[in-house]
Image 1 (cartoon, each protein chain N blue to C red):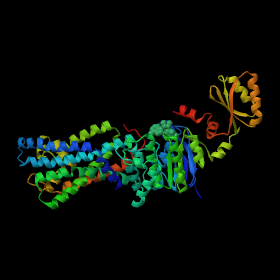
Image 2: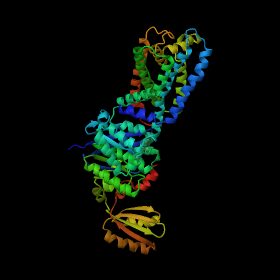
Image 3: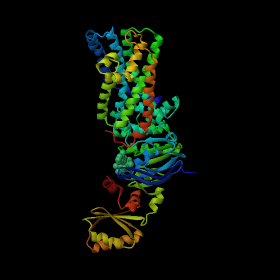
Length: 254
Length: 320
Ligand SMILES: Nc1ncnc2c1ncn2[C@@H]1O[C@H](COP(=O)(O)OP(=O)(O)O)[C@@H](O)[C@H]1O
Ligand SMILES: [Mg+2]
């Protein structure tokens, strides 16, 4: 837990970055959201603006949780790994702590934004909402775990940056965060396939389901994305632990 | 009592470099073991293997009875490390770093706060506690790094070059604190390339060179063991010729002659009081002017030189 706490606190040391991101978020809502909701007249989405705002919350959560991967490079550069690895903490606790820390801080950071989007959306059912919130937690931890795993695997900040860009394109753009599934599906069945098996979609769907926007998307079975997110979290935490232990020693960091 | 650390054939290869080469060494409970060697000798690599940060290529070690390969979690519970290069992110403050370390090591709240303050005061760092570490000098960072372990008081403290970049006053303070840590019950491994530091602090010194252990014993035994226990340094006016060195080696009491500088010769010999007059006579006869002559006890450098034919300083230059 201390490991997690450390990551949370470190994150908030980068005040400048946080402010930039927050501004980015707000401007996205105001500019793009309003324009897009005027332009896009999708039948399945009677109110694209609300749809968009909730999706944007998820995307921001995703990019905040990814951030821990960059911390890993910062640490490699300063040799902080060696220190962390020498502590009386098991590797399992270390990786788990860091995934949770990375996820938690993303969550805290996006908290106000989620609150803002709730205000815009007008959340309805508190119980659903708690369930959705919980799955967002898991989603956030899973994304951190994924970020750590990938960072440790490829050991090069440039390649990490590129790969994150690609991933961003693949799993964020091709998710239901921005457009409903059948819109993506119609555009290209492969894209639709990706969107269908995508933690970002799961998170976005659950969030909308939780906030009581079922009139916007029809989610037959909220269990499905929930299970998807739990699996996502579990897989990356597990792989993360194994890989962190194997790959971190021996240098080769760029 | 069995040794608290038992190192057996410990080996680490980085590509073709044998950083540590079949090292065998024991550390006794409660001692300060000096690990002395020039840069690149393999001290840091040995330490990183002991704290389970890097994996040995071959061989192993037990720490407090736990095998570093099989029980790394248990091993780390016993050890605290002061790294050669302080490991810290620039965004953290002095106090944060030391306090967090103490927390992770499980110190209870009250005691932790008291000890963090005590140690930072002892190290003259209390007034800098709110500063980000990037605003600190190299020597100060080194002290923050040391503070972590002084607060932790681990069963085994491993300290890698604690006084590099630290000024003379600071050095003495750090040395005192290391001794106090030992007196409070910690076993200490002290890696250093400073002869004096190794000599005054260590109960025993292990001398390493090119990944191998040359010898390990108390500083006194090591120094006494050198054949040709007396040392004479002769400063010549002109560069010494090979012929002169050859002549000097011909004295049967002279064990070895090292050319420290072109004009400075160091002789290892027996029966110094009888030989020196003879040498002087010989040099006079050959018309080799002598500026000064100096006799001394052997140092750990001489022990090192005895095994490698190089002084530690020379080995640093070659070794890189
Ligand atoms: N991560 C590494 N990758 C490659 N070579 C290394 C690495 N770490 C150390 N070495 C090499 O191993 C040798 C021993 O280094 P080190 O253990 O740091 O010595 P010391 O601490 O005694 O100065 C050196 O030749 C060094 O260049
Ligand atoms: Mg070293």
